[in-house]
Structure formats: structure tokens, C-alpha cells
Length: 394
Image (cartoon, rainbow, N blue to C red; front, side, top):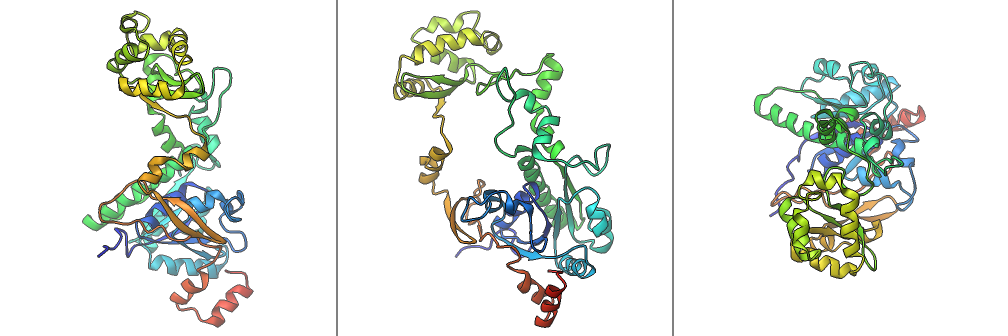
């Protein structure tokens, strides 16, 4: 008999858009929470319009919104706000990543909710924090990558580059998710309700910890070195006779094994230029020339075999198409079919497996798909629904 999912019976109301807040609530939905996504009538979450790659749906939206119910509400209208209040009467958590000041105008900021709905855990996802000198500024992922210094250490020596995914949004979504779970646990064990606040800037600032320490106490920032590791060597891609692979040496034991087995010269390991990681980083060009000269004489398969023999980690440099066919994902049965408007998609199971618990992984909702059903739960009649539609409240 399959047990109920861990968050079964919990209701989350989310005034969300884009990436960070939807990523947090999608993970709650995967654990069995009922997530009611409140969207603008007519247009909805603007991430719905980012692209049309997945059966006419946005790839971002499909990734971030499975398992949710969509209700459309005009929250600028008194009737729309009244419905929102009724949803909060039944909710455990409110998540919002509205623009600066909007939560206060709607009466769903943490301070107001503590008075009107004291049992509801409020979670605010902001750009720069709800206080401080930048509280009123807009924030998008790339802006935050810039302000945290991430761009300064990403790319090549000649040109910086953005990270290829929405890393600031994802970081904030993860901290919002774990913060909500922590607040739920605290409420369950002590009865106390804690507001949760996460900013994109502070989430990504946490992820910048290593380069921050390296720069503050080492006296220089990590260099931009393309796909190589900025502070560990050898750690990066190398050409072979018929392709490329990436190898990663993490310690001196692995370095000595690489010299003996792959390079065929154990004495290289004690060369003063390469005897420690700091020395190898300082002499990276000479090190890469030495390793590259050996690997370009080998096929990728032969190089990989020698690296495996030496116990040195290595990887193929996959394109997205190759990642989608990865044998680990297939062998561990990580793909799961999920319904979306217009078809089905293969979606990855959540990465945290709980023994005896199956993730919910429900359908991705069409805009306003659950509006009528939710309003009927709240006691609205067919005539009420028609009236709300006539006045564009829903």
C-alpha cells in the first residue's frame, strides 16, 4: 500500500510568476501539497509566454508548474481580493514574489498576514530584500549575476559570460522551499508561525562563498579560465585524438596517479612547478601543454580507460541532446510522463528520493483551468461565476 505523500493535506496559495517562487511551490506540489496558483485573467504568469517549445507551452512554465491548480483572479478588484482572502482562510502557506510594494497594497505582506491570517506561513521572494537601500528596485536573474560578481569569474580570460541557466532564481527557489519546510516543521512542533523571506541577491551571494573567501583573504579574485576550474588544476577539458573529455584531479594522490598511469612518468608529480595544487594553478599553461600533449595522442575511449585505471574522474562533454539520452537517467528510471496542455512530456523525478514515497508529479495546468472548481468549493454558484466573468474578475 502506497503511503500518502509527506505534505498531503497542506494548502499553498501562491501569487507567483517567472522562476524563483514557482520553483519553490512546484517542489511542494511534488511532495503532495495542494498548490493553488493565482494568475492574472487573460495573460497569467508571464513565464507562460517565454517560448512555445513544449506542445505550444513555455519550456520554463512546464518545468516549474506541474501539479498545481490555476485560478485566475483580478486582485486589483475588491471581489478578487475577497476570493483571495477566502483562499487564505483555508491555506497553510502563502508564497509571493510580487513586485516591490505590491504585497503590502494587497494586504498579503508578512506583517498584515500575521494579523489577518495568523496561522498562514508567509514566504516572500524578493530581488534585493524587502528592506535596505535596494528594496524598491526590480531584479532579474542576470542583474543579480552581475551584482554578485558571478559574471566576473565566469567566461574566458577575454570575455565574461552569464551562467546558462537562471541560477539566481533557482538558488532563491531552493532556499524558499527549504525555508517553508522549516517553518512548517516549527509550526507543527511549537505552534509558532515564522515568516520566510528570501532574496535572489542573498541566495546567490551564499553560492558565491568560495570565490568571496578566496578574493578577500587571498588578495585576488579567481581568474576567468573558461571551462577549467579557477582554483584547482588540472581540472578542465582536454582535446583527444578524436574528440574531447574533461578530467578532474582533486588531490595530490590523484595527481600522482595521473602522472604514473596516464602520463607514464611518475617523476612529473614531484616537479616543483606541479608538486602542489597552488603550484599547478600558477603554472597552468605548462601543465595543460604537458597533459594535452599526451591526450591528443590517444582516442577519447583510450584516454578515458587510462583515467579510470588511475582513479581520476573524467566525463564526456555532452550537448543537451546527449544529456537527454544519458544512461544514468535511463538506468535509474528518472523520467516520468507528465500531462501538459496539448500533450505529455517526459519530466525528471525530483532529485531527493524518499524511501517509500512516490513524488506526485501532477499535470501542468492551463491558464485558469481550476477557476470554476475552486470557486465552487468556496460556495460560489453558477450565477456567481457568470457574474465574475462578466466583470472580468476571473
